Image (cartoon, rainbow, N blue to C red; front, side, top):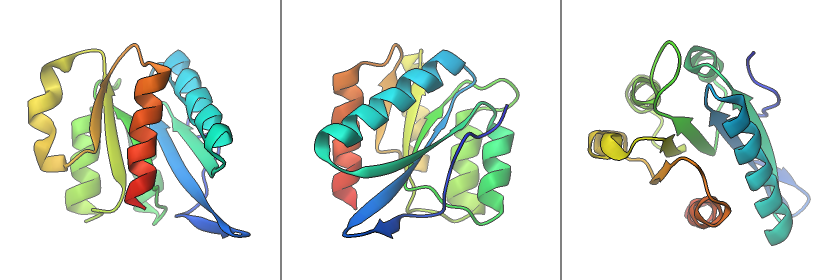
Length: 144
């Protein structure tokens, strides 16, 4: 398990930025589906992205603790041994990173109200839909 491929914070590639996008979910199918949606969106709108995938929150936290950054993070709330809310709090409070755009994903909508302190851009309900992911990515890209 662990991440597949991630580079550091947004880089220049010619005249285009490369957006570093992370996906953290313990469901491999969800990760693969979301990764495909991100790459399809990037191809359609002509942006460059690198997508990293983590299946465990601890591995993501360790990666970020080493000084690596993500531009956008899709973060599942229910992970195997930790939860996305703890990871979000770690990013905002411990790392003091207010720049990474966090988009929470979950199969349950009951978490939505407890996420405001983390300041996510959005909260997506599983099963994920192409249009919803694309709309959220479009808003995240506009932030940059």
